[in-house]
Image (cartoon, rainbow, N blue to C red):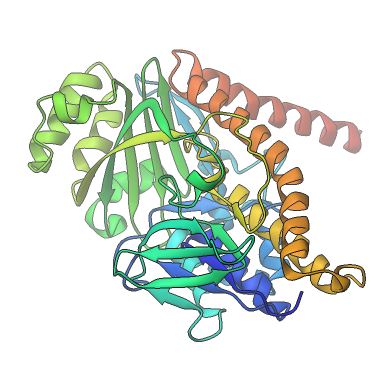
Length: 410
């Protein structure tokens, strides 16, 4: 390829990772981001990066050491409790003895985003550029035109990469599929400076995640590296529940009490305290997803990564990892075309189309596998036996390791 125009729509983990990988291999690109700056909104909670997905992408991007500076191995600790408060599993007490122990350290989303942002060349990101639509360029085969809400236009784009999330404006070029409601709504609750303000909550949640799963409801709490705890009180309800339930979400104290009274009132006191005492912020969220196994026919000059391609609920914790794996595979495909002797004999359009096909051939099955895992998590997390089943998996790993150690010492 010569110097084709590559437009990445969205400055989330996937789009930023792709840009870094391309620039590291001397392939120019531009990110168009709807937000006006890196600090315009909170970037969310914490996440773990897997060795063969997020960490591998960062390694090839030359950013793994920087990731290790900010990551928190202790954040892997898992605590599982029953709805009545009975503790089913607690790695804060016994240590992390799982099969993947030490492989998936946590990192705050904001820290990960800053690592990626700071790795890019100045001017890579055009902030405040909310995409309105993408159209094929009628005057140039396989090229596209970007139309933005500020009435500006970018002509003759050779490759448009939709990294613009659930409601992608790029996706309609490839498929008519749209996200649908997963059946779950979550109330996000924050407790800031938790060690000083609420030592009980800090100790109870522990160093990592504290989960309660039950029929039609779940409470997922997680420690963040900035000294906060975020909890997600989640319920299986119709799509209009947030609007129709009668709770005034602007009155946070009353809303927290209503959540407990209406949906968690038979729970143990510790479960209720997490909800009632996470009093620094409250955000209702509806969770959407794309069909498991979504595919489309490859088209020259346009593709998707991350949530744009395969939106999933958070109930397997793989979303960002899959997005970064997408970025890595697409970058590899584009780089291989750039470096291929055969490819240099063809046009940019041909080489990009070849790279897209190669990337999508690996992305579709990977996305399907992770979407299936996530859907199983959605079903399990909101079942009456979900907590016991989750804890039993960890207990199985523990017993296997214990037996192997005893055999070794015998």
